Image (cartoon, rainbow, N blue to C red; front, side, top):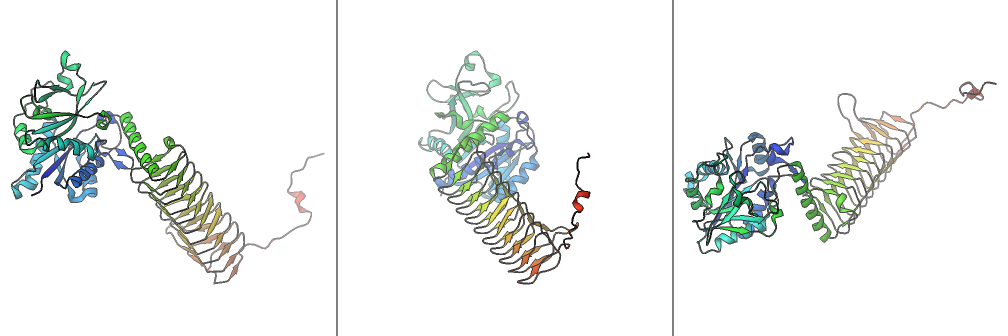
Length: 475
C-alpha cells in the first residue's frame, strides 16, 4: 500500500500590510496567484515520490473569493477548510482536520501517514525542498516524528527563533515571547513542516494559548523532549514571505529571473533581460530574440526565430515561427502564423487570426478578423469583424464599418482583391475575389468576382477659382 501525505496550505490570513485589492492568497505573481505555487510544487513532489496525496487549504478572510478561485481552477483535486477566527496556526490545523475527518475519515477511517504544512505566502518553496525535508523524516528509521525547515537570518526580526536542545529535539520561541537570550538567536523558523500525522493529532490536543498573543501556536508541537528535528537550509531566500508590496515585487523578480534563465538555456536571446516582463506560463522557441521593454503575459506560446522588438505587449497569444513583431505593438488573444510581420504601432485585438506571410503595418488595428496568407494591410486602417482572402492588398486608411449602433456585422473580402486608399466597407458586405475598389470609395453593396467598384462624386474643376479661397496679402 502506498504511503500517503496530505498538504495543508494555510491561506486564512488577511494580509493587512500587503494593501492590494485582492485577498492575500490570490496576490498576482507572474500571471498566477500566490496560492498556485505551493499547490503546483506539492504535486510535483508527490509525483516524483509516487505518493498518494491530497491537498487541504485553510481559508478564512474573504473566503468566498478564495473558494471561487480554487474550486474553478482545481475542481476536486483540493478541499477547503474554514478557520472561523484567527486564533493561531494550531487552530488553523484543527480546522483542517475537522474538514478532513468530514470528507475522508468517516468513509475510510484512516488519516494520511504524513502531513506537510506550508504557508500560502511562501511561494518560493519548491518540490525539491519538500522532497529534501521529507527525506529527513522517512530516512530516520521511524525515530523522527516531525521536522521543521529552518534558516539563518542576518536580521531575524519577526521570525520565531529555533532553540535547540542539548542532545535532541528543539523548541520555537515566537517573536512576541522572546527574552534577551533568545532574541539574539539567528536560526529562525520558516513555517514549513512535515509531521507524522498521528503525532500531529496528539500534539494538537495538548497545545494551549498561554502566550503573549493568546493564540494557539503550531510551533508548540516541537519540544526538546520530543523526537523532532530542525533541518537547517543553506538558502534562506526560498522561505521569503509576502507581507508587503516590496516583498511581492522582490519575489516576482526572483521568479522572472529564473524564468528568463531557463529560456536562455533553451536558446532564447534577451538583449536586456532586466527590462523584460514575462509570465510563468510563457513559452518561447529557440533562436528567438527579445528586445528591451517587451511584456509577455498569460499563456503565450511563441515559436522559433521570432523577433519581439522593444515596447511590444503580448497577451495570451500564439505566435508561430519566423514572425517579426515590430516596436510598440499591442496584441491580445490572437494567433499569428509563420513569417508574418506586425507593426510597428499595430494593435491586434482579441480573436485576430493572422495568416502566413501577412503584413499588418503601422497604426493598423485588427479585431475578430481572419487575414489569410499573404494579405497586406500596411498602414492606418481598421479591420474588424472581417475575413480577408489570400494575397489581397488593403490600402492606407481603409475601414470596415462593422457596427450599426446596435449590432456588429461582417465584411468578407475574397482572394487577390485590391482596395485603394481611404475606402470604407459598410457591413454586412461582400467583396468577391479578384475585385478592385477605387480609392476614396464607400462600399455599401456586394461586389461580384472580378468587379470594379468606384463610389465617389465626379471631380469638378473650375479654372481660376482658387484665388477666391486662398488667403492673400492685401496691398
